[in-house]
Structures are given as structure tokens and as C-alpha cells.
Image (cartoon, rainbow, N blue to C red; front, side):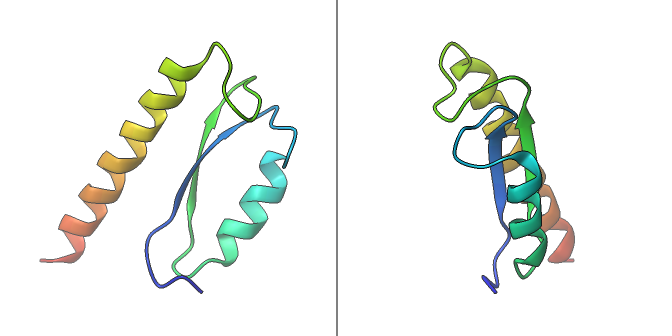
Amino acid sequence: LLGRPLSVVQGTKDEFGSIEEVKAVIERAGPAGRIYEVDGASHLFPGRTKEAAARVVEAVEDMLQELAGGAS
């Protein structure tokens, strides 16, 4: 259990772990994590860094929004 929010940006063609494997791990994290997929990207996002960066920004914005909502 991490005790903190967790977001993972993952390529759907990541050679080190499938989306399903990563989802299984982050679902057990405490609190449950969230995955942001980059369709067709491998582990280091070659040629896809702008898309991966956009997913990171999305993940951070979602996390900040959730944290702000939980503080009320």
C-alpha cells in the first residue's frame, strides 16, 4: 500500500509490462491507481513523447482536481 495517489502513463505496446499487468498492480495500490494509456507506444515512447507528455499533464491535472475535491 502506497497511501498516496498513483498515476501511470503506459504504452500499450510496452515490452516490459502489458496494460493488463500494470492495471492489476495499480488496482492493488492503496488508494487504487489510475492508468493513462498511450496507444501503440513502447516503453520509452519513441516518436510519441509529445503524446506521452500530454498524458502526464492529464494525469497531474486529474490528481490535483481529486486532491482539491477531497480537501473540502
